[in-house]
Length: 399
Image 1 (cartoon, rainbow, N blue to C red):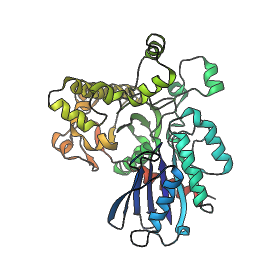
Image 2 (cartoon, one colour):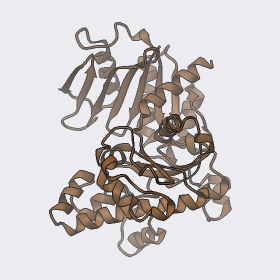
Image 3 (cartoon, rainbow, N blue to C red):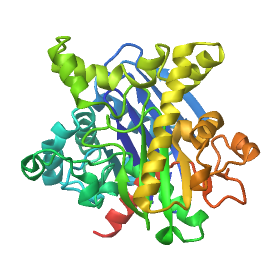
Image 4 (cartoon, rainbow, N blue to C red):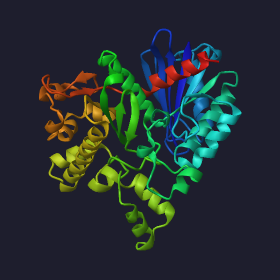
């Protein structure tokens, strides 16, 4: 069974074609800078990689190019588009409506559109991708896999804000959490590493990338997570500030005269590592700046690690203990220095790294905690595309 997974951003489409029976990735790639200058499509298939600069004015054209690349006589992984048995779409926000992966119908698509106001930066381009995918593959089952679903069963004490209750009851203003596909993928793999004991373990998973969040998992279920109604809340990220006094927003608008759109841009595009360092949203460049003596870069790294450390302490308290700490995503999987800074002074919780193992864990699955420490510390690479594909197969099989 061949499954195509699609992850549509505002100006990009990430895709992957998998043979689920053989457990192999047949093709993958990225359509970038859609609607901008220097748009391009990068593809990898059969061990061959190539990049083509093309005019890609909209997501529809991007998806056409993906299909064309999969059917390419020399580099393609398909001989006919009918070989695609199903398409799985990453959907960022499912609100309270969608708590499991769901077959896409006209009604489901309409409901996702209704939820677009909850994720105005993410759901609209995803909807474009869904509609274009349905147009190009009209007889192929299409499945929505929601980033919010993993957190859907958080207890009310964790997901309700202390705002007037009518906002929760009437407008669904609550903490939803994101990166759920990644957390579900990593939790699944962690269960295997624990010998099937996830259901009896207290686990904290730190998804540290350009977007970053952290989740407390009790018995395999998300019981709290750092992102909220939107992906702004929680940890310091590449361009988002994470937790910030809501009064700051009022100050920016009332005292500095910023518009809603300007505050939105500031919080989503100008803050985090980018705003603190003044150098970049890329952790590698910030670390290079700190090594060269840049004090703002050094401060950015300290704030970043401190925020993660605080959440680990808070979630250990929420869980009533801690058995396993897991690092994943781009920074979490590849940056020993950040992991060490985060784990420093957490010995009282039972967290203690093996420096050699930590330094050797770069993009690979590995145990990095000291063998005698009470808490196991793991690096577990995330596989969002693999999880989307598995969920897609499960939904289609249930029809």
